[in-house]
Every structure is written in C-alpha cells, then in structure tokens.
Length: 159
Image (cartoon, rainbow, N blue to C red):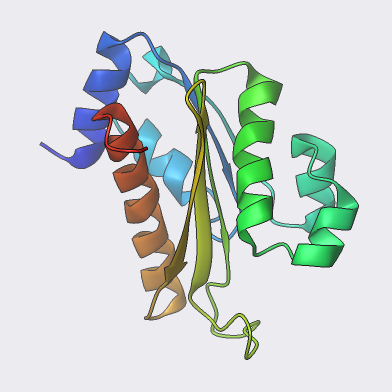
C-alpha cells in the first residue's frame, strides 16, 4: 500500500481534514494526496501559491516577512501552513516552499533549499531540507518529505 493510501486511511478514520499550500512543488503534494480514491473524505483544498503576491493574498503571509526572510524560509513555510489551515478551517495545514532549480539558488540558499511545515491544534512544526537532484527530483523529494511529516504527526512523533 502506498504512503498516500495509508495516510488517507488514517485521516479518514480519525475524521481529520487537510489542506495544502505549496510553492516549489507546483501542486504535486495535492496531486499525490488526491490520487487516492476517496480523498474527498479528508482533503479540503490545495493552494499553489507560486508568487510572493499569492502567498500574501491567499494565505495571509505578510509582505514584510517575505521581504525580510525571503519566500524560501522557515518563517514563510510556517505562515503558509498556518494560513491555509485558517483559511480553510481544516484540522491540518501543510506547506512547502523552496528552490527546485536549476536556477534561482544563491550562496545563502542554494538550489535544493526547501522548508516544509505542518500546522494543527498541537502547534506548528517546520523542517528545513537540503535536497539534491534535478528540478523534478527535488519536487518529488519535497512531496515525500511532506508526506513523511504528516505521517510523523499522525503517529504522534512530532514534539
């Protein structure tokens, strides 16, 4: 059984709803979750907030935080997860923001720099990643990591 199926089964059993806010993955996380039959029982919404303006408009991420910390930062990942959770009134909001490449990286934030976050009633958890590979490989690895973060949350491994 695929990880998405297992997670979906647990979300459905616990009557939990999830929403996704993603940037560097371009909708891949939402796609993977909704590839599973019956996902409408637990998946509410997915936002692909690729531009800084859409992060502000749809998720409420303050412009000054994006200016100060950058769109690819732990702070923005947290605000995206919290924003999507609040906007959709779901139990769990997850997010991903990063640099998939092959361009866009800097010395401070090279290609493969990614931040993922999960927001729930228990709080918000964020994780920084340094991934390697092609653009598509980084997108896939990021979606894998978000699903792993969700699994850790559901297994009560996040503290």
